[in-house]
Image (cartoon, rainbow, N blue to C red; front, side):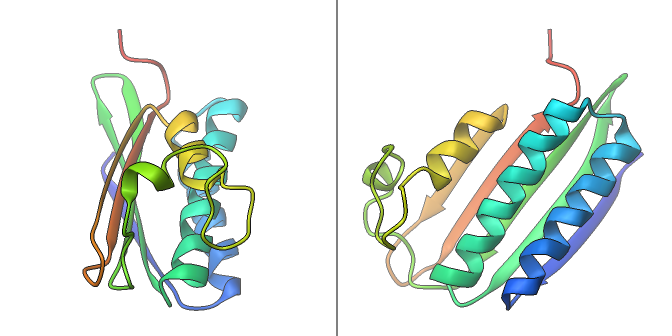
Length: 136
């Protein structure tokens, strides 16, 4: 079932393209509506961050299965300015862009697995995974 889709995010329209690609993969794998909504919302947030804060980047969606349990992995990568204080950025309510400060913390809550690496001047990489059925 392995399938990989990469979307280059350079403008606002690419955010929607990434979201639609995630929705299509979730439908293909049989994700429940709530699970699919978690994935598409997370992809939208990560793609918007690429466009607004990093000057662009890539969203890579990877659909795989372990036994009968399909999962989708979302990787958002950029070569932007990076995040000076990742721990602070992951706190609810903290925003450098005037928003609500719920973006990355929200992605962490919506997805089953979440990892972020960033450093000033070195870009950011976020990897998040959602299982179609919770692993037992």
